[in-house]
Image (cartoon, rainbow, N blue to C red; front, side, top):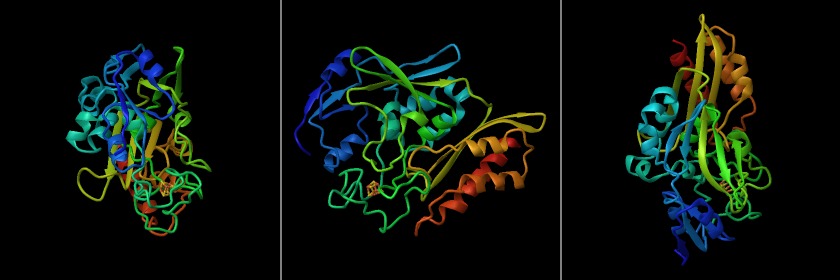
Length: 323
Ligand code: SF4
């Protein structure tokens, strides 16, 4: 690990003033410190954001606001989250291990880096770690890689379970810039597809700080999160599905589906939601939703299994929430 400065401010303003080129904000550090030890990330300065008062969960007029440094375990256990946004609690509990959830923060979870093994190997070509160096994954051994939203420059998966549930819940990221300005971004505007610049993963500008995540009132009371992985715990999703549905008179009145383990960002497809809306649940409808979801999948060698697996998980989740 290389030497670095460490700063521990006690206000968001001071944290932003402390940030300069080469700065990384650190919350739980569960991903950042691993990457620093591997010399995949080499910040000159760490600014600790754990003492800025960003660890509260507060109800708002139409939803709930989650502070950036709320721990994953506290968020999963919050009674309001469990009651109204249960898909989020379930997704959190499906991720990582209890020890990691006790330390990892909400903002850090959104910003965690891919677990592509070539990204973590400083001797491998990787456009995300070293722009322009190539992509060792394409043509390499593939299993935990994306089939949707990929480019010829990067096929890395977004690894978060929490962000998949947040995508289904229409979460907004609250971002503070230097000078006191605040802006919000929905997850579709927050995450970038890899395109030709896979090293730029979000629309966060240098010196901006996530202070909270807002969830509006859920669009449905029938919620589920299902994750398939190589072992029963402490493993990333091969595929996962988050569902938020509302039923009326035997029909699907609203549907918000999001997917993990398939996309370069937490994946949502408006055509899947639209297809389901207004329809009566049936196997044929769920099969059609699976076809729509995977219509543009790039099934490179080693990743062919993702299509039928994602379709089966989607069908199982839809069956569960429309019962
Ligand atoms: Fe790097 Fe992306 Fe290729 Fe993995 S898939 S080696 S992260 S460029």
